[in-house]
Length: 263
Image 1 (cartoon, rainbow, N blue to C red):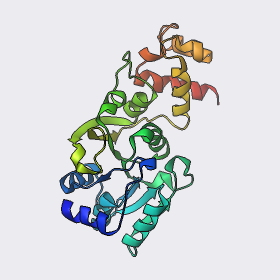
Image 2 (cartoon, rainbow, N blue to C red):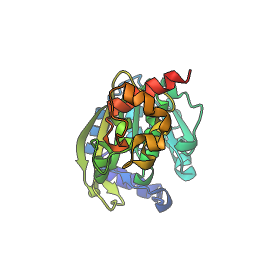
Image 3 (cartoon, helix red, strand yellow):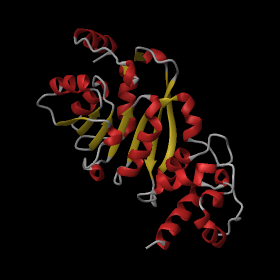
C-alpha cells in the first residue's frame, strides 16, 4: 500500500485516531519499509509489535511471512485488526502491554513499536526486561527523547532508561521521521532507533534496582542504597560516588554482584 492507499483505507474504514491513546498513524510507505528492514526480521521470524494502530507495519510483516504477535490497547482498533488480518498467521492481543503477563515473552526474536511517546520509557523497559531472547528492537520515538535514551554518565538526562538501553545492546539512531509521515501529524519530529542485543544482559530486577539507585541521583549512591557500600568499595569505586556518575557497565557489575550476594 502506498501513502494514498493508506490514507484511503483509513478514511474508508472510518479509523479515527484517539487522542486519549496519543495515536498518530504512520502512513509513509518508504518509512514503513525502512522500519521493517531495520527490524532484522525475515520469513519465519517471531516478532512482537506493540501499538500496531491500523496495521501499516503489521501488513508488511504479515506479507513477508513473519510469525507476528500484535498488542493493541484500543478495543476499536483491535476489532479492526482482527477483521483486516483474518486468516493470516498473526496473534492479535487486546491489552495494555504494561499489564500483559504470560505472553510467551521468551520466544520473541524481534520487537517493533510505534508507541505514544508518553509511555515510551515504561514500554521500552518492560520489553528489555521481558524479552530474554530478543535479538533486536526497533522503536519510533520522539526525537527529543534520544538525549535521554543515549545519555552519558554525569549528564542531566542520564538515568535508568539510558543505563538499561546501554546494557541491553548497541543503540543506534537510524533516521529522522517528519511530522508529515503521520496522520494526524504529531506536535514534534520523530526518530527511529534500534537496539541490537549484546551478551551479559542483567536479569530480572535490574530495572527496579536502577530506580532505587537513581532515587537521589545527585547524592551519594549509598544514601539511597546503603547496602551497596561494601560492594562498590570492593570494586574500586569511591564510596561517595553519585548515582549519576556510575557507568552502565559499573551498574551491571554492581547489580550482578549484589544479587549474587543475596543467594
